[in-house]
Length: 296
Image (cartoon, rainbow, N blue to C red; front, side, top):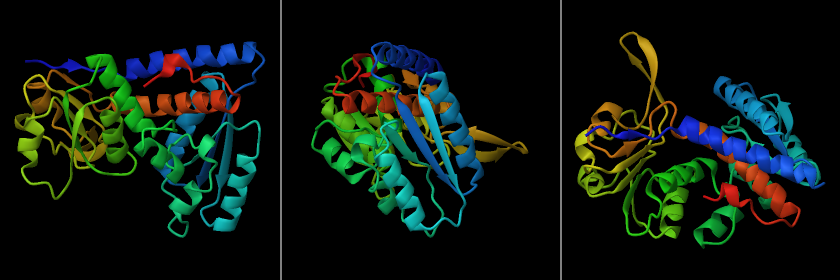
């Protein structure tokens, strides 16, 4: 069996086009331009790449982009004061503080200073609690993108057995909650799980978000299952650095019914969902309904 490749790059492009159309409608209706503020502390190379990509995507969607770059030695009081200003800025609908932060800064404190209504990463403790109790919240971007692709592939998820490998606050836990809300039967696996391979083998859906290169093997996959590979790992192969996921793509694709590639799978959806969350936040702040075209 050759798995269908779930084209995250193409899916994300379609989502971004829908976002752009919704932004244009908001502006035409006199509701203003949604705005996203991104805060970067320090000069981490990977973070700088992500911030540039987010800025470019925000502008292309017709939104306003506000970048705030602070030196690595910035103290907590200065950073928190900036966030409070952004909380009160009517031009800003979404606030994202790029992680990781320098070691002297408390990421939880910083995130929980963001206005929950502007927390487009979905990391604020209020949004975590709302998601956990099935209420309207801002949803973390990566699991939201995974959910969109799963619903596009399967339609309804009710009754399917899903295994989430990884229990992080950023992907694993919110992914499990989103699947539960869609009536899937969910198992969360982690480093202490006994018979991980056997648990995966019983799943209709496997979401790999453990951060270990090519950990999930083809023989762990139920024939016809859907595999969502969240991992992005750099490894040395044949003398050069390559990107691989948390799954052995070739082995899993030989068994699965559908699989996301790395790169080109989940990654592009994360930034697209950041834009979707910014648009949703803008609509909510204006008393407008959530955009139906972006529903996860």
